[in-house]
Length: 410
Image 1: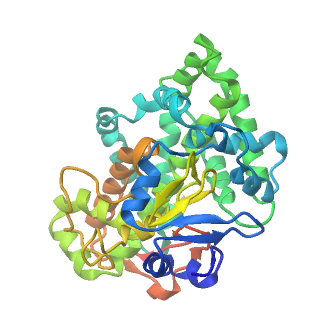
Image 2: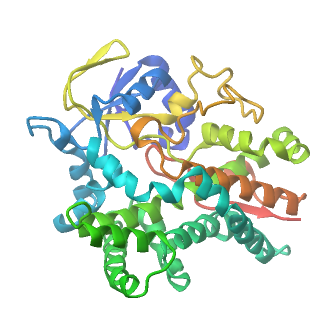
């Protein structure tokens, strides 16, 4: 098939059907990023996506491949967005792009904050934040749920967990919004601002420790600087705060929009709120915000979908096409909150798979459960304030994000 243009307006407008067409035409396909001459393999079928995400032969950092001769497409993409050379590493050298023992070392430093037990202990606080936000929503005008609920809930939770002072959280909300802009040069200012902020916060938190993740990271760094560098400390905080609110906010926004446009599913969830955990999984499968992974590289030639991907050739696993693959899901186009492929484990790949499975998945699911339950119980008359086809989106490749979600509460 022809090379897929990831910025094709038709694909951006409907990635669900668009990537499904790609999947059925070819298990893997060539794709291009705007302004880049290096093609990328798109892996689209469920089993092949799980192979890319779970097979040790695929790495996130091309430097992990012996020989040192694999071009770094990640670096090219970051530099193409105007990032100065001295800041590129903050976007390419963190936990999301590390492999093997390096990845495990970084993951262990923060994993205790995201254990199942710790997440359960946080639920009352998440519910308290949700209730306070719902109390503040006005009932006499159109409300943008993305701006007034879906974003404030996860940014408050992750900032409290990490240790960002309350008065500074609006800064991070603004930086996060600008980070995802596709405008030329839009990434530079917020990235530098975040890095400078953490550099300034570290000595203040070192002088006055607190019961938060940042204090724990500082102690780990100070106890053994060879194990955890200054740059890794800063990168970890930036990554956790951004990843810990952006995707969850859009899972909530996308999920509410999906429920409001599927009245049968909405009515069922209102009647059976115990379905909420299963509903969150189905919404993550059906309208998850992250539709393609970071670039992976095979450390050796690997056969996928009947084709051989050569050592070092960049690969993107397409989560949305895997989650809509009829080889794995019955009637995948249908939103079905009772879908339970296997109650003992997570079957969709919305949070990834393998070594790089989303560290904060349990927290994200809990926040979404609390957000949906609180909103639906509080406002039985909740409805869209515009027609479904008038909902505005942030047009980004391999992403599904609402720019706004205008609703009427009563």
